Image 1 (cartoon, rainbow, N blue to C red):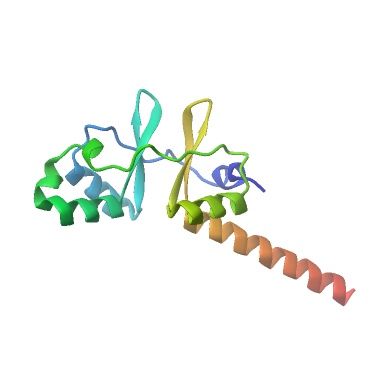
Image 2 (image 1 turned 30 degrees about the vertical axis):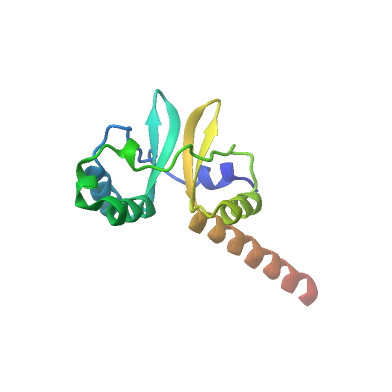
Length: 141
């Protein structure tokens, strides 16, 4: 099981923004799509991540003026990226150690997907449930 498995089960494009997108617009995008973060892309490369946390910390520090700032002034950078061959368990470990909740999945420098800690936890729980069911079936036979 790899991150590629998770990405194959999805449809549609990754929601992303550019560094000059106003913070106000990103907040609207996050709310409209019920997501917690978006990758920030420049010249087809992931240069950062804009998350709910970034908005909250910036608002507390600098006030409502941040709403009109470009994302590049508020985003977390550099982005921690991973390859699609990474296992969900290794991804969870990385997210826990780095205290992050989203990972851009990159191949050959290009963004191919974006996974959240919720995606990885869900995949892990499904794997554990499948193993438990296989054990029950084995014991019953």
